[in-house]
Image (cartoon, helix red, strand yellow):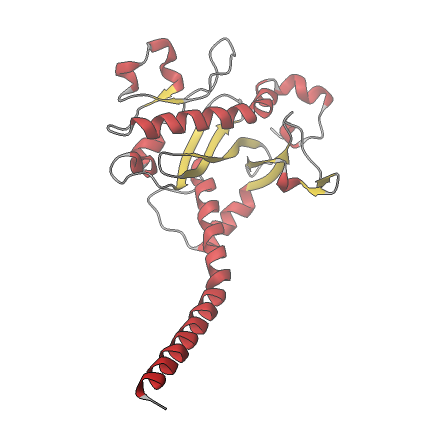
Length: 249
């Protein structure tokens, strides 16, 4: 056998062995990766309602413990009604809207949490937005994944930006739905005073990221508006729907 043939065989065997080892490592780490992804999402859900501190480190076990004691995941339809396990044999996860309830130790609903999944400038923006049980006031906002430009649109992951959402309103005093918008620069400098409660400060040099996020949040909150309306009119709603989770407050 020539030296050339031996070299080709050696290279082929080496590629096969390396490929096998990489595949085995990838499959072996898959469960760990999935657990880390789930823990990170749970951590952001907890952050959105202030159940954990943003600057403190928590173990996966601590995150799971706090989550399981306080958070309940449900599915709703476009009318804001709870769903069963399936519809025409199709798993509810395929067509229902996921929602998370923050239930305090007395069994009362403090807030509901909506997963954010919207377009950004360069890719998806994923996170959570929490609404207080009044159905109109933002309790918290978090981002756990995005592809925005570091130092510009990437600032959406910073606490200073996310904290701007706390206390903002998704409805006008009249009760009309308006969602929440990202201002161009400081909201106090560019937004009329009467609309200031519906805007958060924008990011300098990241106007497009703000526009995409504004549209995405409006579409998202519109989809969940039926749930928000139920919370805004909870007393009337619970007179005839006492056994639903919405009435646990």
